[in-house]
Image 1 (spheres, each protein chain N blue to C red):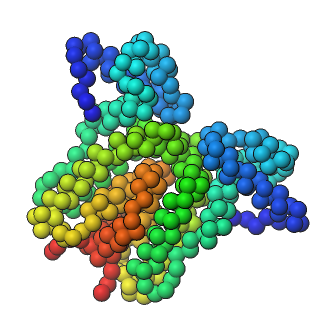
Image 2 (image 1 turned 90 degrees about the vertical axis):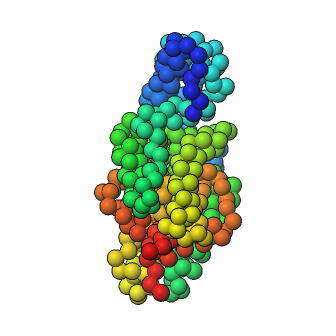
Image 3 (image 1 turned 30 degrees about the vertical axis):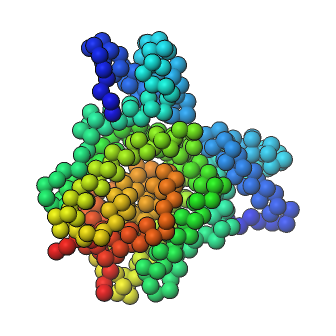
Length: 194
Length: 194
């Protein structure tokens, strides 16, 4: 996410627009959000919004990424224990998503991505990529250090973790955290009997 | 999904309404679909639609389940080889989802579920439950027969499989089928080195 540039007043304006975007997303969802509505709610001119974002997709992406950022961005920790680090990451995410304002925000973005708006795929990729890349990098380190097999399909594992969280968000089934132990046991230890 | 009852004419009517629902979903998405629009498109009275479905959520659910049914419903096969059966199931689903009309339909339903319509959770559960239950039952048989560990978290594995497919649908990244081998290797064999 690019840092807002320039003077403090610009930074405040920038933040006000992002905040207005999040509020409108929560109230009406992606489909009904317009650049005009955002400008009105942020009490700025329409041109001020368009000067910063060419369309609503990148605006929404930055607004949601900014909310993630405020909550700490959820980088994947690297304590040298891949199981513990993935469990921490899953737990932090599940906790973040379980908060109603965050849940509404994330569901709005999923709705946007799923609704096949012309730029929704780029939007989803932009939101998904940091999580995917963070997991992939952490798994790669684990493979290099011999914690997990060198031939493991790191992308498939990252997607299974993100996909499980996504399903939990959609069904709003906030399971006890020990649910993740079962997922991690399967992914790391396997469940097959030879 | 309940079988349409009564005379052949009723069955034809029923199918025409489901077909009109799918067409409208593809054209406009869930949010814009109304019982009135469906009736108009199916060339039936509004009462005819309301007599069969109290609201659009169960109508949409049946229309999408019906499309799945026509494509074979994707039961999880039981050949005695859990790895092969899961791979077949994942491949069939990925192929189904990759077809643009099906993809549009499924994305519309995900959008509906994510958009927090009052009944969207029930809708999503109705669509997800058959897949989840099918996978769970198949995994349970594998556990009973000693193919997989008795203490495996079957729900977590089912969700990892469904979640991975869901993510693929949302990002429209139709990976080569061998992607599933990496996922299944992780889930069944594990990737950790002791």
